[in-house]
Length: 149
Image 1: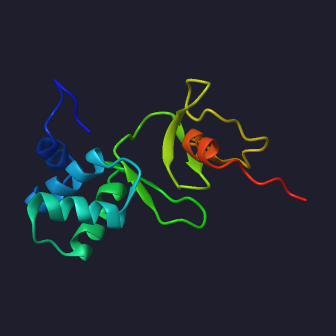
Image 2 (image 1 turned 180 degrees about the horizontal axis):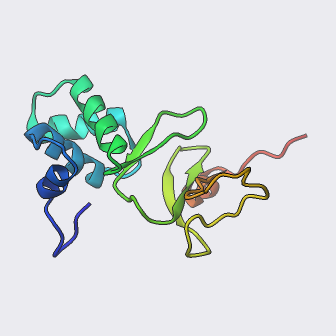
Image 3 (image 1 turned 180 degrees about the vertical axis):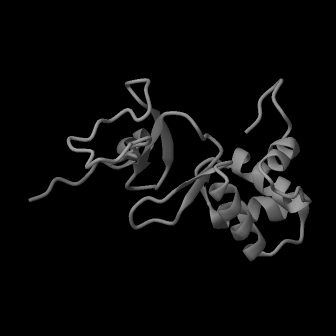
């Protein structure tokens, strides 16, 4: 979301045609505070921040913010959607198969998209989304992966 010298979150919402409410501001703060969190994670953070709020209000705000490209919704296969405020740049994600921790992985090539399709089928490609799966350093250190027999 906004950094020093950039418009405020409220200004950014207004600029994108979004009515500014305390609930929406709290959801934006939650996404910033809890990168790669699920909707349920965001609900808990928002509830601690402003008190009473419905789970549905948080879900609706997340969906609307993602539709406006103000946050990014990441949908790993077989996992709940996750949210982050790092939008408009060229990065992917790595997920630990053991603990489900997700981290950002910057592209090795700086241009969007950083991957080139073998056949674009006539599409004008503007994004490539990659999710790498593996085991994080903490999980590797705590329990070596069993050897298949």
